[in-house]
Each structure stands twice: as C-alpha cells, then as structure tokens.
Image (cartoon, rainbow, N blue to C red; front, side, top):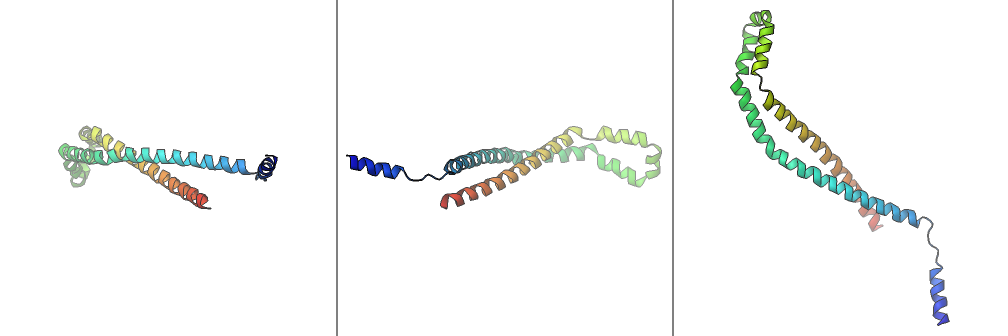
Length: 142
C-alpha cells in the first residue's frame, strides 16, 4: 500500500503552471462575454424584425397624408408665382405649416431612427460575436 501511495504522491508533485489560474479565469471571462454578446445580438435582431413589418404601412400612411394634404400644389405656387409668395411670405409659411402632416412625418422619422439604431447594434454585436467566437474556437483547438 505504501508503494501505491508513494507513486500517487509523485504524480501529484507535478509542477502546475503559475499562470494556470489566469488562463482559466480568462477563458471563463471570454465565455461570459460571448454569452452576453450573443444575447444582445439576438435581442437586437428580434427587435429589428418587427420594424421591418411596421415600416411599410407607416410609409404608405405617410405618403397618402402627403398626397392628401395638397402640399405639391402649394409648393408649385412657390415656383409659379414667386413674387406673390415673397410678398406674403408669412401667410404662405403659416399655410404651409397648416397643411403639413406632422403626425405621419414624426411617425416615419421615429421608425426610421429606430431602424438605424438597431442596424447599428446588429452590425456591432454581430461583428463582436463573430470575432469573439472565432477567437474562442481558435483557442479551443490549440
């Protein structure tokens, strides 16, 4: 029995690398970061997909409001009778603001802004995810 114990003791006396703890902690931190980036990427993509469905009806409503408001006729007055418009510029600008479809314009601008922000996040997180996962897979095979 003492012989087996001495062999076991000799096997346990192997030198453990001094940076083993740092390597293990680094790997755990990398896995945590990869999980976090994956969650953020999934959230960004799932938030972006409904906006793709929303943008078409919002755009259609915006375009119909612009057509119904008669702003094209109002703007054509600016090109056809510039002298009259410049003389009565205050009334013309107030009339223009009166016809301006504010709600549909604000809605389309809000949706487009949200889409641009989500595209930025999707691109950022997908790049970070693929770089991190490539590094992780490369380290795993080495």
